[in-house]
Image (cartoon, rainbow, N blue to C red):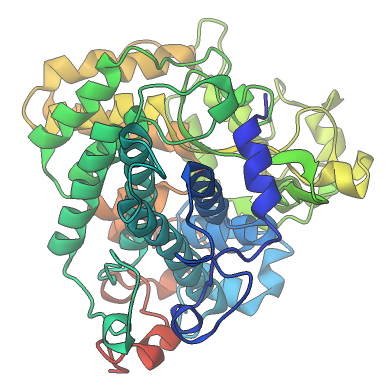
Length: 500
């Protein structure tokens, strides 16, 4: 159910409460700008500021698919631009590893995430400046914790894509505070992890129904564990991820597909989920075009992103091992592919895809084809789950295994496999369990913007990308393409970075 907090976000979409450009924030007197004197009066204003900050996390209706999905998935060995995606030079440059510092999509990704960080910093500083008559101690603690989570979440997004980032932890008060040097990865991880520890200490375990979609303690602990995992701190990662499991509020849902077709939003498996909605407030809706973006042309979609043969090969790699002689159930719920068991909206696969090509089933409606929808109906309101409980289980298993606790890790992998109707693992060595985790993460998280970053931290990019069959895979260079180039506009505007 879409809730009151979402209505508050919707009400803020069209209003420029925040100055999005730090220079404008410093120099202009915008009557709509959110300033200490004009806006921050009480806890209701803080709630409005928090809602506006959450609205920046989604990326917006076009920003979600054309920026976020493109940047996070196009470099993966499992994704190619589709027929329509190949028409856009800057999109295609990302997939074919011809990215420059002037690329419009990577520049927008950088900008959109820093705008969200700037929003969060405004709320934090405003709340810190309020007295007890304006906001209670509990409200202050929770608001700061919530915004530190968002700040860490967005910094972590950036750190996954750039080798070095600018750490923005305060609202700039002058030009000297706008020119911020790049931080080392160790410094960035330390800041992200501290923000997440602070957030976990101040956030509730659960929210009531009117606040669905807000960050919880489990989200803060989950991302803390993930950040530690990415840094290779196995023991510390295991400690934090175990805390999420021990909260006792998350579980795997039986139907994997329901997590991606809009029929089971904000489920017991959801750790942190971006909210989209058809509901209108002041004429606005929070929608995306993922239904069009992911759907193949045969379904009436734009085919902007396509699965590679490498993904289908990986998903079939264990063979037919379910009790009813089928492949892993996640294959059927992720892809439409040439198989007698596959139907497409009630029609035989071969009738819909006579060329035999593979297409996405994930993140599109299960009710009817895009071709059978009107324009407004076809605009997707399917939520995007940024972290699921299955990720917690597999990360925890990985941390245990890398920490030498291989036997203890296996039951957590098997929990995930059981949902897919797959038999328990029979391997027992650390190396074999490591390989099993690599496979399970491929099965679970295809198209969820995780694969490229997993391959990089496993030192597998040089193996998987050139051998993926992707168009342009031969352009991949580990030295050049492991991270994105700092955007040209940032180098031009930030004297502490410069143009070199």
